[in-house]
Length: 89
Image (cartoon, rainbow, N blue to C red):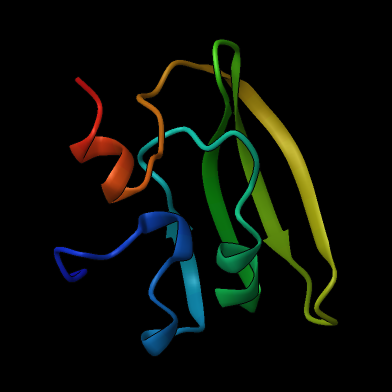
């Protein structure tokens, strides 16, 4: 479980690397911190975009390289910081 003051865009580096990461909110771009925390041979599924979003599948190759493919169009809530959530009225 993430701490209440955590920022999901930063992942959870203390427990990395991860075999799989699923992001349940849309990021404007793929956060580099999440790619770094993905284990070689691992996969991340993340919605990316603002108004128009694509569900992206990120595979980290055994050599550390990354391949990214668009799977389908989606509509998720935005991935924001705790500060942005508390100050949006």
